[in-house]
Length: 262
Image 1 (cartoon, rainbow, N blue to C red):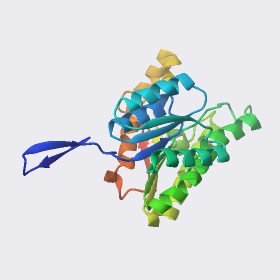
Image 2 (image 1 turned 30 degrees about the horizontal axis):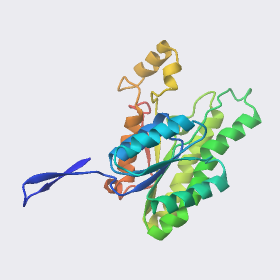
Image 3 (image 1 turned 90 degrees about the vertical axis):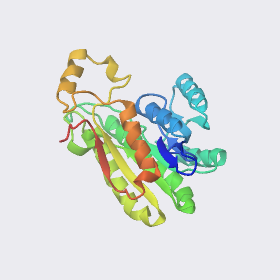
Image 4 (image 1 turned 135 degrees about the horizontal axis):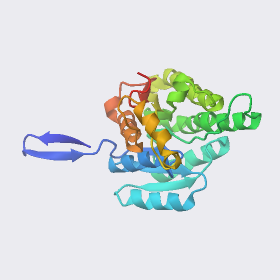
């Protein structure tokens, strides 16, 4: 939120940075996606989010977002399917009336050393992590072009920036997102459509809570800020890129990693 001082009435008006905007967030039933959805609703955005199988979690999140005074709806949709992405975009446009922000957050990992990784596991990670970004961007492009505005935010990773042993498939998918996003920024910039990337570092979520505590401590100690990030840390940067505060920012990759890549 931000504050505006009304000099005539000597009072302060509380403004929400995303008031009136509609955002699609993929993979939002848990983790980073859920954190983004929550913060976006707090900032006044109407939220359409997708999930793959967690129906109960999605229903709970939908109720939570609506309670914040915004319009919200969860959609069971596979972003890796071109046809489902097209259907989703049309359904959201019909339900919400506009699509102002797209956050491509859906992703999976199937880690293994190159000598052991299967073709199936390589292809699956590329399909879910990278092709889904193509699918969803294509799906919202027509609407954003007609509106002559839009912000596309794609979730990469520090692994996509620097690589990581045992994650050739994941690193390739996340690096591909960066190249794709820069190209989209060049293609659509003249229509006031911006395309940017966030590369999260070690973010502590439900998944990392299952890891060995000593391993987590080692990772934290290797980070200059000496802590793992939170979904809210990522969400706050998404708010900046989705809001009018970043109106002159496109084609950029923001590392949100506590200084890991410094």
